[in-house]
Image (cartoon, rainbow, N blue to C red; front, top):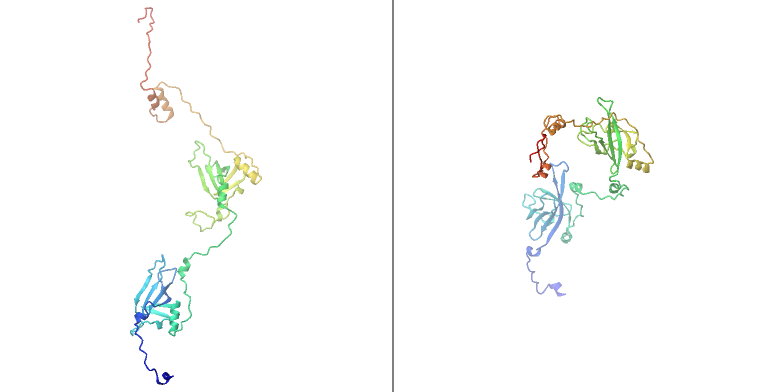
Length: 368
């Protein structure tokens, strides 16, 4: 061919000049990176891993760093570095796309970013330019984010014991015992009767006092409120603050149950001995059907019962009106008798009129 020997007869026209902002318009390299933020004022974490995206714009060699926004993170996120040419050193050089590679560290304004991956377009562009990228890496997890994640749901077979079914079946089923507290060993002690209620729905116990009129005791009908009663309070750890905290199942595992209550036996409740001497019909039938036990009333001497004195109003003594004399018997300090307002309202303006004649005791004729 003559063209190989003598060259082309006509030289080819030069290609049109294409500026960089036209040739590389909308062509952006994307690198995935992260940086570690040191935390000095937290006792739960020492550093935090913050992933970012590095955008390299080929048209003017500018770079921007953007951190993906995480909702409710409490950290100012978004655009960390605006799009600009970033200086590489003090000699006036700038970061170029040739300086970026997977696995390398880049320093932007004193902050070190570690590149661990890039997108497919960046890989193809770097390969076309003769730069081989390192294999991608894994972004290390943030320790604080891992601690905030909820644990995986563990599917455990539910137990056969159902609290809702227990509440539906056993609600309002109360075992009632008549008990007596023998406190005669102490000064001014006596035999004091009580009523013990055992609630089957939650195995709680309540002790109520059997009030008697004029028994000389303060009006406290409930001796022990409804709650679970431990069999022994001495098993509580010595360092347990019982003055400010209630005893729970974490301290005691052995509680009083219905199996521990029997007529004719003594049960210790809050270091007080209660002798059970009787129960009601429901409790009697329940223990007979459930445990095959039959209870009989145990005679207990509760002490002398005060004989009620019948109040009788003494006869009228002639001083004042009968109502005034009656007020002296009703109270120590006599009060004025109360008016019968209803009688006054009902008989208002009601007057009884009678016709009468004078009866003379002499033999003279009566005057008409």
